Amino acid sequence: MIKSIHAKNFKSWADTSKITFAPLTGLFGTNSSGKTSLLQILLMLKQTVESQDRRRVLDTGDDRSLVDLGTYYDVVYGHEVERNIQLTVDWELDQPLRIADPQKATRTLFEPSQLQFSVTVNEEIGRLAVEQFAYSFDNHCFGMKRKHEGKDKGKYDLLYENYQPIRTIGRPWPLPAPIKCYGFPDQATAYFQNVGFLSDFVLAFENLFNHASYLGPLREYPQRSYLWAGDDPVSVGRKGELAIPAMLAAKARKRTISLGKGRRKATVEERIGYWLREMGMIEAYSLREISKHRRDYELRVKTTKRSPEVLITDVGFGVSQILPVLVLCYYAPERSTIILEQPEIHLHPRVQAALADVFIEVVTKRQVQIVLESHSEHLLRRLQRRIAEGAIENTKTALYFCQMKEDSSAIDRLGVDMFGNIENWPEKFFGDEIGELAAMTTAAMKRAANN
Image (cartoon, rainbow, N blue to C red; front, side, top):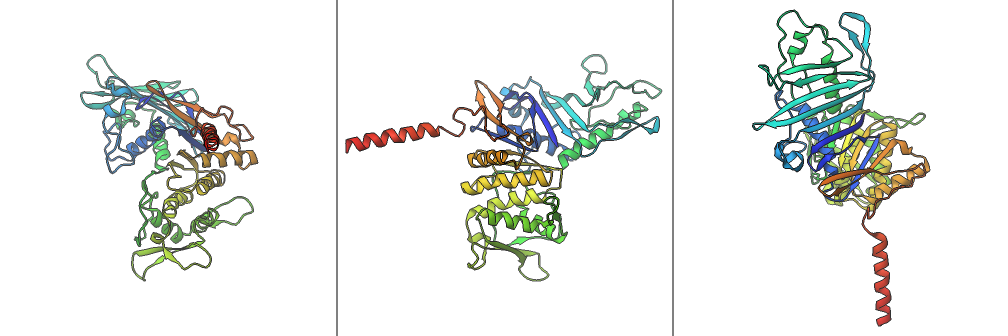
């Protein structure tokens, strides 16, 4: 689970300061306030991890990626390319990382349960370069730092704290560039005798982002039929285009969901059906083959108990928009991270509020972390209510308000007490509701007087 992020000189953020994450983390704020950029930090690191190009320092994407951030000029704060971008991510491991002593395998050298990764990147002659990166835990640190002087300028030194690497006998060669922005080159373990564990940190970092899923705000239109060839999608896709294949895969593999001690396990299909009914969207649905021995499937729904079954294309647009959100919440592996951008888009206020209940169940019963960006007051109000009712502890949530201040984005954590009250409610958080009511009342009184 991600514990915090910190960025400097990234897009509209001169300095985000340390942003603490919780099992349920929500980013709210005005348009163009920088909240989406915070999600893009995670998405950029995820697609960097998944990139096939080991020399690509940061994968800023293209039109086929999770996010397309353009060039370094587009990404760096103020478009000032002489600045360095600094990124830091802290995360908690699913289980402690046991690292054996290279010189005595029966002895545990380190056993961190939490890691921090930090990297500093800049651009030189049109190419990105890593100034330094490091993995830190407890009072230890391992990484690489770029040389800026001497005949080995542009090469790298190994960084370490509270541990003494042993050089392999021979000339003390400098290290080549890192792999991407976070990996140690093979020469690190060749030049030093007792640092074979460095790859464990890299694998832990990759595991974090390989188990992160993203659903964007623009989702696919419903279709009259869907294709599934028996594959098992990693996620539901950036636009939810793989939601139906994911449902079919979950059904074929008989995946179940634990809803807590003493409660019967449910299938992914059952839980999605439950929430669609609870939200008042539909009464029931069925997902079945159009004909045997074909790869074509259709999704039929009943809007009421007595209504006939119709294709999903023949009901309101909201069903197709909420479905990928629900599928991802119950399809994503336990202890993974889900990143959602405007999950409430195109949904009725009642459904927006019910989304908070879905998210609470997912983070408390499935131990899945949810990081979302939203404009929904209804979602936030339901979350406040559930905190007051004790459905989720306020310590399990981290809610933020983003806004532009002068020439940089700024972020404030909302102080939510155990009764669901927000103690530092920002001015005009969701517009000026009181001002609108007062203006309406004044106008009504004037009009009545004139008549």
